[in-house]
Length: 163
Image (cartoon, rainbow, N blue to C red; front, side):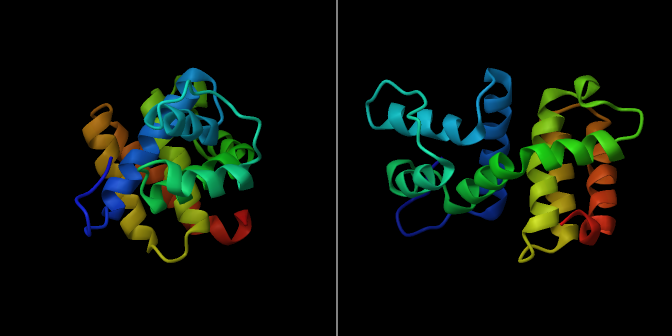
């Protein structure tokens, strides 16, 4: 996803791209930053694959190597770094819905949304909840928007205890 020269990518578009990358990384059993590295290698004409870099090294390399919006990379990096915590939150607060029963796209939206709600203070929580619900409504099942919004709303209310 790129934007015309001189025109930044909206947060909505960056958020959707982050969900796409997280979704694909989960489906392929990769770390989300490895997924971005593979995309960078493909765009650069390389073979793709994990290079053995740490997350910090990858962040430096990826900012220039890939046409990934900066906010997308910020969200993907956050999910990669906080994945175990976010997984625990989803297991704890998605009462009666283990992650294995959730549609895969809902999980990706929840991981990105949970990271954004808890750790990205410059975006108001209601904006994140609406954006996540909108994505779920467009990309997943009929009931997903309410489920995603409800679970992220719960995390929003208790986020001070999650940090």
